[in-house]
Length: 124
Image 1 (cartoon, rainbow, N blue to C red):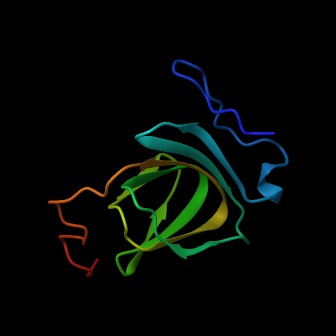
Image 2: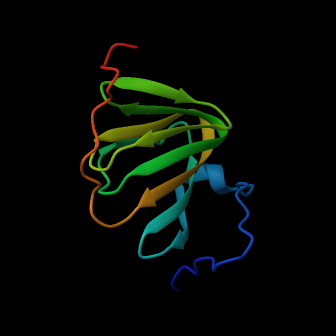
């Protein structure tokens, strides 16, 4: 059975279910020609290894604590904090505490003309 995505104007629940944290649950909530919205449930013991996505992305921590590895450093995200990442940048995600996150990926050609490296340098 195919996953049904939300339609324009439909309410989307973001809270995790009672049994979500037992599994790595990635649910594509909405997918259009230009973006994909994904609710991630990240158990502490199941990290996402380094990978890349073609489009620009954001990751918003809704619950728990997330370690986001990119640009040679780790950024810790707690509830109501987010990170932006340019398209094509390698990154890894792991939960320091069981976590729920909302990821948005812009689809289509990778944006050109802007820096993909952190303009502040790698020293933070």
